[in-house]
Amino acid sequence: DGGITQSPKYLFRKEGQNVTLSCEQNLNHDAMYWYRQDPGQGLRLIYYSQIVNDFQKGDIAEGYSVSREKKESFPLTVTSAQKNPTAFYLCASSIYRGPGNTIYFGEGSWLTVV
Amino acid sequence: GENVEQHPSTLSVQEGDSAVIKCTYSDSASNYFPWYKQELGKGPQLIIDIRSNVGEKKDQRIAVTLNKTAKHFSLHITETQPEDSAVYFCAATSGGGGGADGLTFGKGTHLIIQP
Image: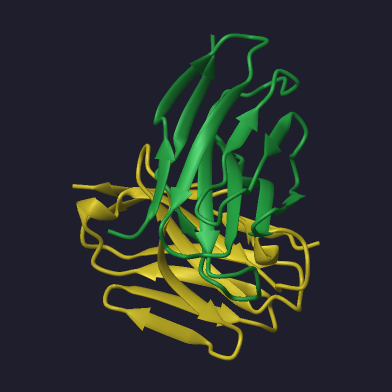
């Protein structure tokens, strides 16, 4: 089946730790994205990547980092600099970054700071 | 940049009745308007979209209308069923810049179908 796989589904982090969320897609999409979702806030863009070895900051990139070494993979690291990391994180992809391209989402990862 | 307002934040309707969710956008250059449905604990799924060269699009019980002059678009669900209960997000994009194809999301509507 083609799709976007995020792992883990649930993750607990101690304060001061970095954690990495995995995102893999087999849709052969060039563009990939990371969103953060908080209750009542909608979806906010963290980072996006248009092509391998390229990525750009979104609206709320502070405290996060990404890499795009392979077309199918776009991991997100939540660093200790992110002051309020507890949220639902969504990875997404589209054929390429351009007007009107459908964006497909993964099933999300819940991150909780303990 | 684009700003998308979505109303209402919560909508409760009786099973079998119709539901309407409305969104307004600010950027007159926006030309693509998708709607997503998100069930609890899952990722959003695209349910319908419309481009600025059409005024209405239907897919079975779901329809979307677009008024470019007033800069608003709406999602209509007829003959609602329990499985329609979810959070619905509208979005708009001009594709002219910014991240994610310039896609800006509304804050979501929690649709509750009462049996």
